[in-house]
Length: 396
Image (cartoon, rainbow, N blue to C red):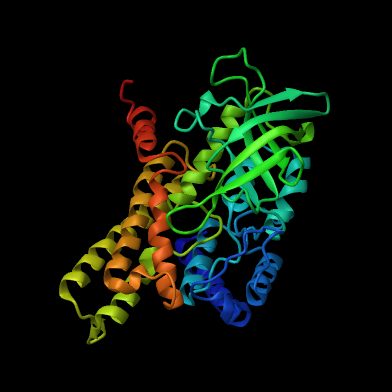
């Protein structure tokens, strides 16, 4: 297919998507506001539920996933067009969460046909929320030191131990977890990757309140919790390979490589916020210094986005491998810098807690919440070590 024909096809697709979005994206699903996570414990606003249902029916909640599991079957280029057109009308993502960005892509690579058929369609439809059971009190950066044990009981594993920083555990339906199934094996071996339900008696969740005022992180305790054998992903005692790949999917999402659900970047509203709070002159931001600062930041974002696009196009297997650490390291800093710039242009209105406009409250929460991006998914120091060892080939 010639480049001109391909471009023509994309433009026709863009026109179709634009028209569909105009007809189907409710006003209550545009701008700041609620985004569905799939949790059965959170009541959705009517427009948010309508937006989710309409996108799920079209496969737009997971646009690049195979149609056999409810995905849209779109190419990366088509998905990029979809996200661009959503951004143009300030449409929020119809669905977000670890189901789309982490466990879903991992099951597409490592899951059995039965596991894919059972778990992927509910994710696409927004009927289930997932959380991650990785870090432990004494196994954070050194994740392979985890101690949560899973004893083989025939048709199931019995789990005992503790996880921490379990994002979304308080409202999640399922967890994917790394557990130790062989205590005599070397540290990076004897680990298995399992799935388990969160509504069982053996699982206790305690939310941890953060500086942003939210409590997405939790402590999770297992006391004879059950993970069925049919929910073992990959081989017994070989879960470290699966777990590392999932982390690459997580980092690709944080770093802007992911083809999953789109969440607006703080940088997208910078110029709009600056004009509102600093004034405008001839259609431009009135403050010359801030205009130059925002221009430089937007150039960095554009260069980063183009580099991510090139990395995705050069990688034939989907999510890149060790390179995800580069994008996570840089992408997390860009997100934090964008949120900080937005707070600066809004002045005291960017520090709102109560009695402020929705955009202002969103900016404050975003600024505080994004402080964690350089920690979760592997801290900056961990990413730098991976880059040094796996990408640059430097000695230990």
